[in-house]
Image (cartoon, rainbow over all chains, first blue to last red; front, side, top):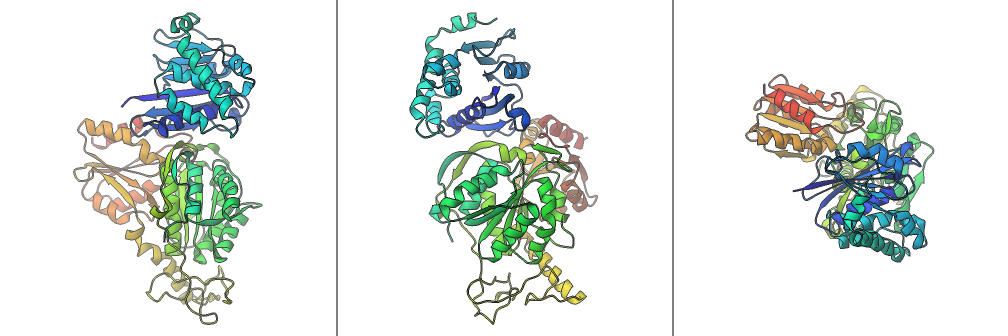
Length: 189
Length: 386
């Protein structure tokens, strides 16, 4: 069965690992897929470019690391630059519009941007930008049903913050679904 | 005996190998944990430290690994199921008292989440290069039991199994996992408590004053322990001792003492050794591996099989004691045996020794820091049938 490799990258502290955790949980607990999350550890993962990798598949995942991600969620320019060259030739880059300056893509690659930080700020807490990104991911890809990922968000965020986080998720999702893809593609440099 | 429902987080969780290991220990009834934090094992201690206060367990962060190892032995004699976790450098420091645990015949579980070494090496990256240290790291002659999980699910299950083996054979049991499995997050299904079988500690039925700490069991099996706080006054020592636990410093007592420690593993090897074999019947080449390497070799085996190469495989769930008998049998049947491991050839030496020249042997080694590339394993399979 198809295997999807996903890389989430950003600054340490932006919720990069949590993003990976929620994608993996959504796929394996709230959907019928296997999902393996690995992450970068060590000083490089604390404060500077940080990344989490998720492999999602219908079959048991035997090789745990990503090799050429099909999807990248980029929440920082550094992270994007560090990892862009390892992307699959037909990979999709989902990026935070105000933080990542997109460079030239491969002929078959696609990129869609979302002002996740601004949306998070409108909701009152900048910290939920990673969850806006997850909503955007749910709307822009077909890795799993949006509802599976939404349930994973609800069950993973700190108690008392579910409502805010679900709002953030829904706003990201709406941005992906309602925002015309042609328009998003037009933004590609 | 079944697990206590209070200790079992029944359900489907998304956990990394270290957290799953901690849940396995808790489900097994572990109530004492002493450790010193070290990457990449710390999450085990962290989870235990958060969960124990709710369950009546005792967690102590010790001053170092020497003290940690001693504390889990002491608490085991105090009647609890105990565990510690560490990685390479800490494993080195624990070796002396690991030997004490063997000599005292103390049930406990020690987890080594292996990273690259020697010395501080690669704290955040995987290795499987402590396998011989697990067997020979303490001085003297002895046998060990060591298990190697390949996933968070197995980290949970094998931790329970390690506790059961430690109680059954009254000795420390090692879990030799690695950074990749420890830090990999996957679905872990924790069953209902009544689906988890536990081996409980055997205590003497004799009255205080009549029992010794190493009295042979009535059935000739492993001696029952003495409960504390019930009037038994006894002495135990790392010195060579008799059944009373008193030092006896001569060759005869030493032979009896060491032979007993070795025999309980060697004579029960068939019960302890756990192998998962696949496609062995028609195999010309058999790959052996354990832990993460047994998983990473799968795509290479599948590719070779697809091309008509008759490849079989053995996943060693237990790495020690080594499956000598099985390797000897296979060596006279197959063309080639290959060990896949994240070191420069450790369990390979055991496999090669047991093959005794009856078939070709090969190693797909790796210096660690990541896992094998499936292509490298595939190349070794192709090479072996030339």
